[in-house]
Length: 132
Image (cartoon, rainbow, N blue to C red):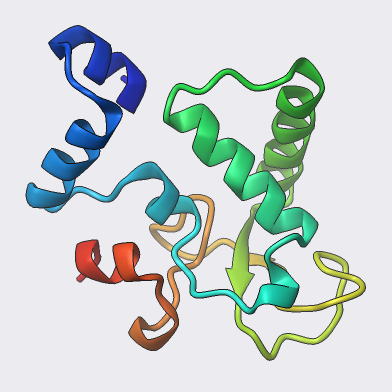
């Protein structure tokens, strides 16, 4: 069930649902897929854009058909390659981020789904609050 569906079912705002999930120790969709503090130069790299769009989908926002198709293709490529998204501000340019670096696609490790969780010092505030 998406955040939007939960909010609609209980007649509350999406913000209220996110706040309650945080209180329960659950990670909000955006913190699950974008757990990093990113450099400004890296915020519009393709991997970051796809993760933001995927996060919107998880929250129940309707995506443009073209964007939805791009997200599906990108997720399929990651699955087929058994890869996850990794971020570190010092990663040099590579196939995941050919011009700016920062992001890389790495082999999926045990328990990893879409992203490799960063060390605490690189986590976003919302991810730091919700991830042990």
